[in-house]
Image (tube, rainbow, N blue to C red; front, side, top):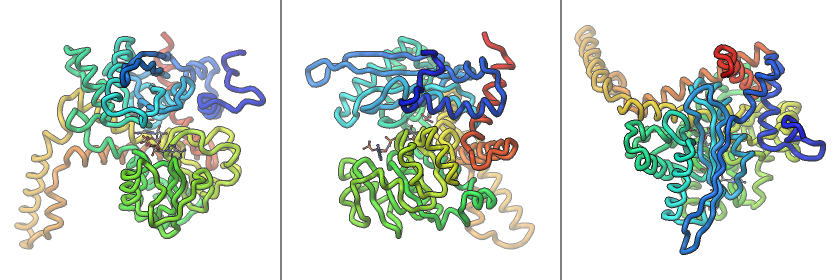
Length: 480
Ligand SMILES: NC(=O)C1=CN([C@@H]2O[C@H](COP(=O)(O)OP(=O)(O)OC[C@H]3O[C@@H](n4cnc5c(N)ncnc54)[C@H](OP(=O)(O)O)[C@@H]3O)[C@@H](O)[C@H]2O)C=CC1
Ligand SMILES: O=C(O)CCC(=O)C(=O)O
């Protein structure tokens, strides 16, 4: 079968990478990109598959992992590392492709990569996971798929700060002469070279994306909504790293009402709103399950939760959650794709035809890689952001207060003194850079939407912006 048709025959559903390619094809058509250039952009540059044994409880167990490099027009290639019971090469290639488009859209100067290990992290203890991660890291380093200059992983489903710290430490032992060893991976704990604000970054970025959308009354109206975020009923799927921080911030800072939470074991529902922090605590005490949480109704039919009446649906778990099978039953006016690939190509068309607006993954969850970019720069710079200027800015603020008081003869109120004399620390700067990135990304997407008369098709607008930047870099430099 020719390569370009390999993901589609009449009876088979599209694979994940087939879905991503079909979505990108709409933008290639609009931009009239030459087919050869389009194929070069879509093609996954290289994929490493490794199989390695680890001694688990006295017997050898063989693990399979992948690291895909989708593009190298910018280096390093960047993207998370997923640990899950169901991971395969196609999924990793699709996620790597999404990284390429995401980085281009929000001007993070990286190529796209992604990695994964086929294992259920719940089945192994901390020591075993450390052995597996360190061995996987060794395979990646030895085969040239992990390096601060060329390929830099980060957290994704099933991994977090802990795994990133093990990766950095293993790399340091293998490459002791590399002064930039900390930049080999992002999402590390702050005390191991990480940056403040990375853990919450993807979720916070989701919220910044939503705020930017709601700043524009015309687009809000076109989506069949009105007002601000504060009075909206929100259903969220997945209360992991991304979903938890997004839901928490929407509740705490925007006063939004989270009316349903869908997790692996089912869905919690309460139209008056569900307290995110308390559910999170409940999950922590109950092996990640939401069942048994006292202040909401529980149903074990989690999938039906996606179809609940609400204003905004935030899928923040896994890919292919909204498909041709359930898309027509979605009642939300706005879908905010916090996860990668939660809506399939076919479902996307159904939703658009039904007037549902979808803010696409490549934009919505770009906050994670944006703050990873800041962390990578911090590691290469070997200095914490704000260290040089914070005290200087505070002193300048104090001088301004003194000048103001001597000119007016009045005392400046305490709250104003606090605001004016505050020097930005690392967290302030990270959040400011993240907010700016999400605002600019949205504005570019909105401009493409209007310029190409794409109606409510934000996904194609996102791909148009990303692909025009990537194509420019291919065409300017040529193919080597
Ligand atoms: N972490 C990051 O910085 C970024 C992540 N993303 C994307 O966001 C999504 C979520 O990632 P992340 O939050 O890191 O992953 P986590 O592993 O932290 O969280 C995923 C959550 O979803 C739950 N879940 C799994 N399957 C289902 C299901 N069928 N229905 C409902 N809930 C389910 C998981 O439960 P359980 O633990 O029981 O499996 C877990 O609570 C992924 O698509 C990822 O690629 C995108 C950008 C950056
Ligand atoms: O932080 C990063 O480098 C990548 C995050 C990621 O995997 C993603 O955006 O899907």
